[in-house]
Length: 257
Length: 257
Image (tube, rainbow over the protein chains, first blue to last red):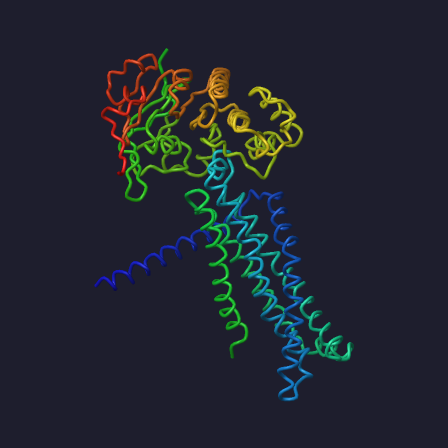
């Protein structure tokens, strides 16, 4: 009996948390469509997500592309398919690696800082102060971040796609001895619009997830420095898990036959 | 002249989860009056004023401002009510991502009543009123001392010349001289604006300086509400113990052995 009540309690807690996140997401999205809009805040967040995350995304995708070329070359050599390296690199980068790695890196870089900043504002009563100064905290704090996540992550992933393919090219041409023109031609001929589009859709969804989790956990944080620390950890962990789950769901909807 | 109530709490109940914080509050503040609310830590004093600002919502009862019950009012009505109110938060609650003058003029800029250089010069003028010169205007709040931060927060609370001002422990954490400076500033600001003021404090010296009337909150109820002149002979053992800071008396502190 105790076991059942324990399981029931966990299920109810999970459902309640899911409901709270869904209500928060609904409220955030509905405020995205209704004025007033805080242009300065939106610009600040666009720079924060788009510009400050670029180095980490660029480095991650560059080295992933390089490793992928090297691994697939040595692996494919077992059944004489070394010539497929360019195809594997471009397909893996655009469909999977660039969006997932960028999403996870942005979760660590931005999701954590959003949760910490908003969480600190919560525990120091700055969010209450916003309400008393005729400013809706959702519009001022959450909407700019969600807009930045939704728009900037696809741009980061597009750049990451190009840099990742370039990483594969560098290893393929200068380390493995592929013909430079042949490598680029093979990449270009193999890639399809759907490969890139599916990656960009994933990026937008991941951007939404990261900013939503950062804002939600920060907004709901309680109890001083420890509460802010917990909010930051929860934001990163929940973003990472949701990104991986959403990745499977989106892949299934795009490519299942 | 008929005394007109500016704020009335009528049978207000409020609980957080299992904890009943307010248990039938009945209290009124007359227009132009300065009321000080005293009571132990965690007795619900801050919750009382937050119920007027819409930050916490009573479970039952009425909160009346200018003859209008504001419990459950629309967001539009809430904005109109909050525009009449200035609030000095316990820790100042200054926004640390913007400069001092932007903090002070934040409400003006959000409502559109002043922008750019007009807002800046208005902020500098009000900073002058609280004894700060214009050299602090471009500093970040974190560069100021505790006392200066309290003054900036006071300037932010009064810049829009509100009809009602709430002060949440305005002298907590300040030295006795700075406390007196803040008390005098509160008196002069309230007098100059002709505002109705509600102050929460544990500081009896502060209460004697600021108050026209004093109310004591104990176990979620107002147990005493009289002119400040009766504070030394309150005729109530609870108030007498609290005012004189005695360990012995009807108020028992729970200390775990």
